[in-house]
Each structure stands twice: as structure tokens, then as C-alpha cells.
Length: 353
Image (cartoon, rainbow, N blue to C red; front, top):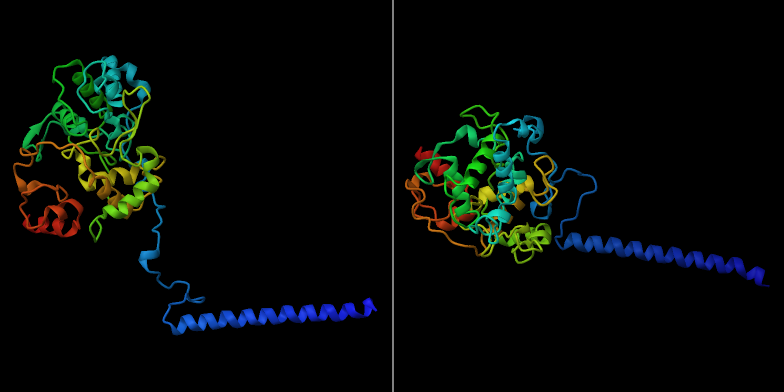
């Protein structure tokens, strides 16, 4: 008897399953029709190249910023022993790489800076392509700089960093430390012909946005990409012995002051675009242009030490587009000079020329 009933049970089970599938299909079709008549835009299954709203697209970053072979390369460090002043050059490199150990708050030579190292801004002791390197320094100094309105020496440029990026005091020009740092910087750029600026020196120029840089969006970038090293409060990660930082503070009392070059958004954006977060390089950037600008806006909107800038830019028409302190020779506000959009400022400058 059971053997006779089993085929009927299987048939009924199959019919129930088919009925459930039909109900599900009707539900899907009904839902699609509801969305369609409600004005919701549905994705096309045939038009593969339809534009997608920019607001929901994450811009891919896959293209190298430059060809490595075309960029300036520092001399081989293994050759430094052949220099007559090799000991001085080596000491200069130590001062650049480990500034705080010698000249920081607990410095064994002097206590004249904030605990950051020169190579926090000048990567790999000033030798990294597009890492704010020293490649062009020896070839172009002394030179006139509009910020001071004077012709500056390498010594003056070094002391600018001590007084701004390191928020500290100037070194004496004839001190052992100053002579060593100058010797090292000259060695780094020794192969660059006088007057030339090699490709890859300084920082990457990030293309300008059509909008203002956004600190709120920048905070999201910071939280996702930077906080693990520089900490959520931006105060960096100190060394256990208190002699400096494993990762430097990006704002707060121990960071660079508002007279530093990286306080300009274009400089900060160029720095992080080619070098940050940890693991990025000009060959493999990890931030989009938008992320770099927004991150710069966020970091540089945070509190940091101030500096008297009253003697900067004696010719105010020479102020860069992103110098955020007036007076200006144009009609744009301090807010726009700080966050942008910068294209109108750049266009106005071009017209005056």
C-alpha cells in the first residue's frame, strides 16, 4: 500500500515547489513594476556603458604619477666614503634622519625643536623622488624667495624648517650641526647642474579641484587611512623613550606651525598623494586627487602652533593661491585662499600677469 502512495506524494511535493517558484517570480515582477512606476531608475542590462552618478563611484587610483626612470635619483650612499668630508656628510644625514635625538626636546646636543625629524617631511633623509627631496637645493641656492623677499642661502632655508616645520629655534650658521646638514644636502644634489631643477624634486602637483577641499570628507579619509599610525587625536605615536616619534603628530602643540610649507593645502596634498598612507609611492599611489585635497583640508583645519608671519610676503601679489592669511592683492577671501576652489584664484593671477 505504501509503495502505491509514494509516487503521489512525490508528485504533490513537486507541484507545491513549482507553485512556490511561480509565486516568487510574480512577486519579483510586481516589485520591479512598482519601482519602475515609482520613478526609481533601474540599471540597464544591455547598455553597459551607461554613465553612473559620480557621487556613488569610488574613483580608482591605479596610474603611476611618473615614470621612475625619468626622475632624479640621489647618489649612491655607498660612495660617500670617497668624499674628503665624508664624516661631516654622515653626521649631516644623521641630523636629518634623527633630528629629535640631537636637537629635539631631549636632544643630546641642544633642545631647540618639537620632537619631529627633518625626514618626517623630507622622506628618506631628503632622497625620495616626489618626497620633498633635496635634489635641487645645491643647484638653485642661494636664490631669491618671495616669501622672505630676500636672497636666501641653504642655511637660511634650513633654519626656516627649524622655525616652522619643527616649531623651534634657528641653528647658528657656523655651528657643527649646521655645517654638517649643509654638507649633506650639497652631497645629495651634487650631480645636478647649477641652475637646474631635476624632474621629481620637491613635491607632486596634484590637479586642482573644481570645488573647495572638504575637511568633513577629509576626516573620513584620515580615520580610514591615517589614524592607525598618527592616532585619532593627530598627536602621533611617540617612541617609548620619549626622544621623538615613530609616526609624527599632524596637529597639536608638537606639530608644525601655520608658517610651515605643509600648511598650504597644495603642498600637503602633493606630499600625501605621492607618499601616503604607509606603503604608497609615486609609482603606486593609494589616494585619489579628491582624497588628497580633502585630507589636507582636514589636517590643516586642526589646531596647531602659530608663528608671526607679519614679515612674510612683503610683495603680497606674490602670495601663493593657497596662502590663507591676508591681505591679498585680489578680492578672494581667506577662506577661499585656504580651501579653494583655487582655479578662479589661479585664473585671476594669470590675468594680472
